[in-house]
Image 1 (cartoon, rainbow, N blue to C red):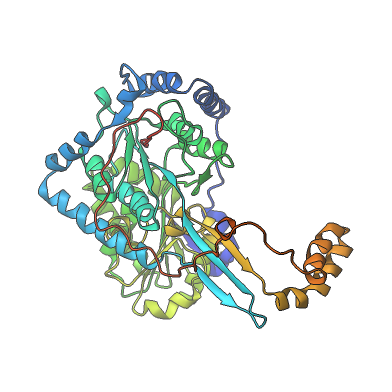
Image 2 (spheres, rainbow, N blue to C red; image 1 turned 135 degrees about the vertical axis):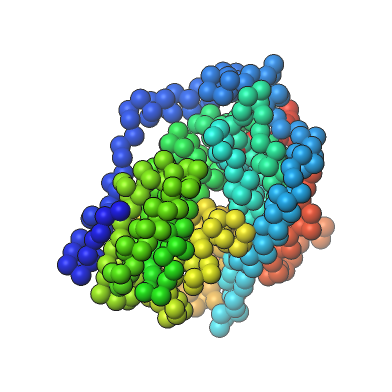
Length: 478
């Protein structure tokens, strides 16, 4: 871990010193992703089977064999140990409660002319959640992606994940899918899974949006299909910034730095403090804990390459540095964190006080752990129910409202050279409406009043269905 003095370097100097310029994607990787996406789009199921055999060593007789059927989910729930089953249920309930509170709502306002303006919130019909696999299982990411979608009212939640030997998917992932309300699952991963979700095949129907983290192939594929389908974000390596005062426990700080460092050799772990005496104490705690960490090779590489101790003049300056870095996770391990919170402008998730380790956010607190990384918290937000709904504007003008607006409409239409625009409003103001003809049954009925009540989350998750042949469809994640 290097030591940087922000008092001498300034905020920008520190930012440059810890900056990780985005690495260029190797040309062969980019070409491979382009080829895979194009092949799945053109050859559909045949390409999926070929790539699943090539990359995952699994090839069923037909694409239907890629489906994760309901019996597998039920068996997985029985297979996992009771403590894991209880943990999944506990986390799912808290995630649902938090995201239900954040659910966007429809609304209306009425102006001085009696014209009604507002917004209608509608859930997406079908979303895909990508869950990484291979070297590790991530049931927590299943909950973090599927539960908010269910709370938002999404009817079809399609999980894709790369299979292991003989097409095996970890039981904890399947049990989490059942708890979260996933309605369809497929054992496919990588760029091929993203392409299948985006464009569909004879067996797998396309989705409206794809969310969830993945490796460089997955990230590139998401950027490639964006525009044909929605995506949440392109996430990079994990990162944490700990702002600590002199009373903070060095062992707790070290544990939180290591919790991020063990993710990936590219993970970033930074400590910012106005107490220089913390540095040797945290360094000693890091050495002690690292020696006993199973993933010490990964964590040690991350700390050496992307770890730093940053000295500042005071805690306000510490927050200034943190804002410049806009980290994925920001911990305020200080005596009065509420005093610093109003100064925080850019962070994916903020953890207040010594008893709030970042890992509670990873698993059970309730807020989402799919967060903006690499400084994108300057403009991006955590995954939430907002990502699974659309907004439609609602406009209903009264005659007097249109009359009042007419001079302004006409002026703007004239200056833009769009006479037809102005005429569309002028006709209504200067000519009476033609009388309706035909029997009353043929006349349009007035729209039902819009509701502003939020949707109530389902009490229990829907039954997961097997892979379909059109028209029913459900998909897996990778």
